[in-house]
Structures are given as C-alpha cells and as structure tokens.
Length: 257
Ligand SMILES: [Zn+2]
Image 1 (cartoon, rainbow, N blue to C red):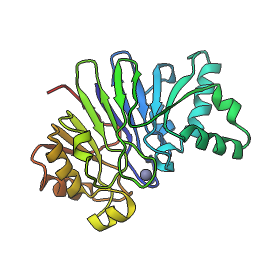
Image 2: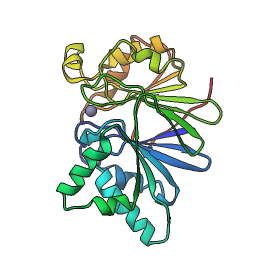
Image 3: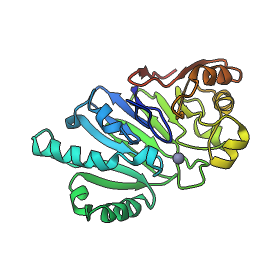
C-alpha cells in the first residue's frame, strides 16, 4: 500500500496548507484517514471521489474532522454528476455519530443531507473493520478524550501504524509492534507539555519507534512554522532506522518486511 500526505498541520493550517489528512492507496481504490481543515480541496488535487472507499477519523478534534462538513457536500456533488451512486462508509469512534449529528443539527438541520452521503459506522478498540482489501483496527490511545490509533494491514501483510494524537502511555509500543511504517505525531517540545496536552515529543516518537521495532518512522502533526529538520534530528537520537517528516503531497510506499 501507499500513504500520501494531504496535510500535516495542527491545530490550524498555515497559508496554502491543511491540517491532518492522509490517503491510503492500493491497486483498486483508496480511503481517507483523517479529514481536518483544508483537506478536501487538497485531496481533490490528486483523487476522484468516484474511487473513495471510506473515511476513518481517529478522534473528533477539529484538526482531524472539520472538513467532514465540506466533504459531505463534495460527495453529494459527485453523486449529482454521476461519478458515484453509493454512500461512503465513515468510521468514527464510539459516540461519534451522535456528536457529529448534534453539530449537523446545530449548523442548519443538515442531518438528513449527510445521511445520504455517509454510511456511518462506529468502532472501538475491539473492532476490526474492512475497507476494500484492508483490515483495520483501532487501539485506544492516551489523548484525554475518545481518541484512537489506527493500524492498517494490507493484502500482502504490510502494516501501517498511525498514532492519532496521544501522549506516552504504557501500551503504546505494543499497539504498533513490528509495523512496517509508523506515522507518529510529534507535536510538542517537551515531555511536560506532552503530558499536559496529550501529545508526544519528537524524542518520544523516536523512543516509541525503537521499542515497537518499526521499520520506518514518519513524523507528523506540526504547528505551522515548526522546524521539522530539528524534529527529525531529535527523533534520530532515539531511533536508528529510517526517519522522515511528513511532506505534503509526498507518497510513501509500505511493504511487508
Ligand atoms: Zn487531538
């Protein structure tokens, strides 16, 4: 499978940028992982909604979910243009459908409209769901709300782990053990900030990658203007393997090791 970075910023997007959004590509389609602000327009630079097989959101913070609102209109438009007929499965953490529905009601009684374009499904840390040929599960991470990591297994056994948003926690490494690529948030500067806000430092991302014995580490979820080379340098002090910082538009190949 392949991973394309649509956006990597948090908690807001700088000029020409998007908050977090990633596309998982395979031979017969793709799905969207996270749908933060600005993601839909940048997604449409590369993809057709005709081929969109699903959407996965790790938690409902707006930098991960706010573009679900324009995405609902974009899918409706694609249906009107004859590009697709069926609804798009939208996977939200447990309780997420009610929360999203309350927001839709508040923003103009839009619930019926979105029910026509999204096929809602909820997951928890025991769920295993399929999108196309991918098998996906959702370990509960440590973000101070109902937030999950995401582990995606491809048809050749290749595995992509994604931390979502999380601070360091007891079982974090076991969730992503042996993954071929770990897409890991590296948001904050100090472990104290991370503990207080539910995020990781670049050093902790490197430590996590080492303990989890992943093959490749990609750092993401940066405040606009972050010195990403410094993030990479700090992670490399703790992880000897391949490290990259998420680059908007770039595609990363994931193969089973
Ligand atoms: Zn968050």
